[in-house]
Length: 91
Image 1 (cartoon, helix red, strand yellow):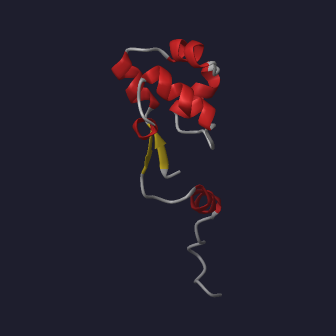
Image 2 (cartoon, rainbow, N blue to C red; image 1 turned 90 degrees about the horizontal axis):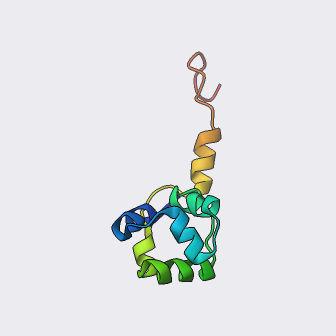
């Protein structure tokens, strides 16, 4: 995914644990962990608002865009089997 989440960096800077942040924003530790590891597919604006409020940051401090393949392209590449070296292309 081309969107990166910098939650881990902000937590270290704020000397705050994921559990403490969870208690403050009302989001489970499991869901924050998914966000922190970059496995989240979406974030509600209300969650983003709560995170920014408690971490005293802007949305751009939490999220950044890095050029790269989209999820669909990643999925396609992962599902493709390598060509059989015993055959030639087009046969």
